[in-house]
Amino acid sequence: GQEESGCPVISAVDSNRLLAEEMRNLQAKQQDLAQELGSRSGVFALPEAVLVVLLQHGIDVTQQWAESMNYVEAMLRQQLVAAIGKEVTVADFAAYMRFHYRKVFQDAYLPAPFSFAVRRSELHSPEGTLSIEEEATGGSTPSQPVCSMSSVGHAQSVTFDLNASTTVSFSGDVHLHAWLAHQFSGQSGSSLALVSHARQFSSY
Image 1 (cartoon, rainbow, N blue to C red):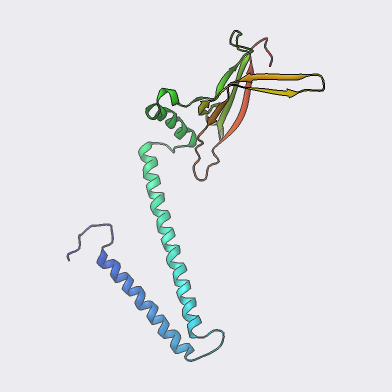
Image 2: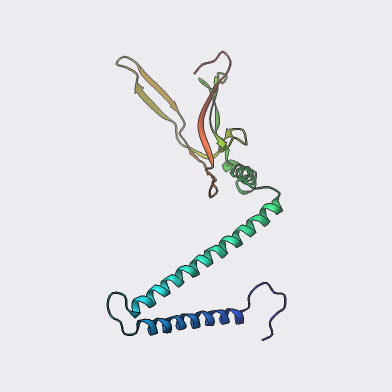
């Protein structure tokens, strides 16, 4: 058939021609080896020489394929960065997902920041806060609480001994939290820290 002019993609006809030329070169190399080695026997005879040539050819083909794929991926990445206007980091993607959660989850299941007030009871004012915060590598963005999905179970009581004469007991609801961490290839992502803040004139 007639080939399209100006098409940057190689046609099927040209691909078959290249494969045919590849096979011709391999057969010619095999004939050269047959003339050089002849009917030689031993550790390195004609079958071993042909095997070495084929293996080396396979290595060269796979290396060229890997370099071609890396070039295409790098070109697509450059185009994507140019279209967005910046290189998207883990913190940028996490911020986008927090915005997108409002469209995906119902209000009852919407991930919320892992930051809770610490108080002696519901009748008392908060003594401070307890949170799990993440900080992007490099400190490009300020630390902020992670957004986790949680499920509340039945209240349970916990008791433990401080010493032979002192026992501590407390009770409360059981919460199970799930957090989705984002990480890009080649980037270490973010670090987590358990942070507690006490209000003025408070201690806990």
